[in-house]
Amino acid sequence: MSIRLDLHVHTRYSHDSGTEAEGIRRACTERGLAGVAITDHNALAGGLSFAAELPELVIIPGEEVRSSEGEIIGLFLEEEIKREQTPEKTMDLIHEQGGVVVIPHPFDYVKLQRLSARRLYELRSRIDAIEGLNGKPRYWGANNRAVIFARELKLPMTAGSDAHTAGHIGLVYTEMGSFDNASEFLGRLVEASLGGSRYSPWASQLDRWKARLRK
Image 1 (cartoon, rainbow, N blue to C red):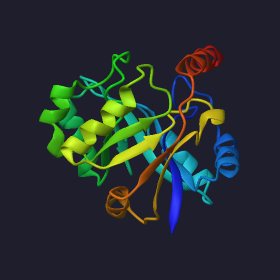
Image 2: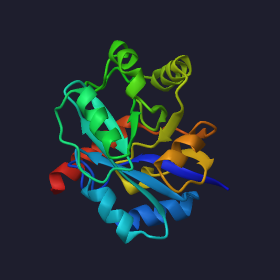
Image 3: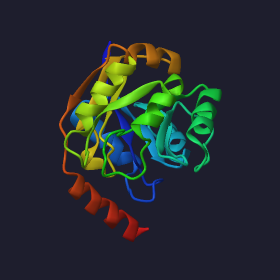
């Protein structure tokens, strides 16, 4: 059975988002999603909490970890990964708990917190997937370059909205076969398709500033 998932979503556990469980539920219903991966900034609590609050949805607990060189997403996590460790250490800690390493928005050159192409190539044996479609790249060619890079390295790709508000959840999605665990997820990801459309990164930035002011 094929399902649609948004594999990059932020919630109130991120410093720049206010999304609650009901917002996730509503977005999934309206956009035909089976669920989401919750990837809060340097925090796993959101993924674990919402997985319990939303049992009717597929909720993948994850974390967008700020390593010493750039952001790395860990999916299927059980323990939070500390920030500012080397990329190698961060990826190894994700794998040690059976998680999946995904590199988000690798070629959005406006973002400061990203690993360089040279480092990604050096780390390729530790990477499980590349985010080939991000919902709000600031650099126009970022997604195309990510797809080319993933194909060069023969790595599967994910798609995620990078939503910081409930209204953006599901605008970008990964369509793939259903799975029961991280290993099956990776197997299904090989034949996944990426869909949806981008939205304004500047509107998203405004929403993030508003969320910060409310905290």
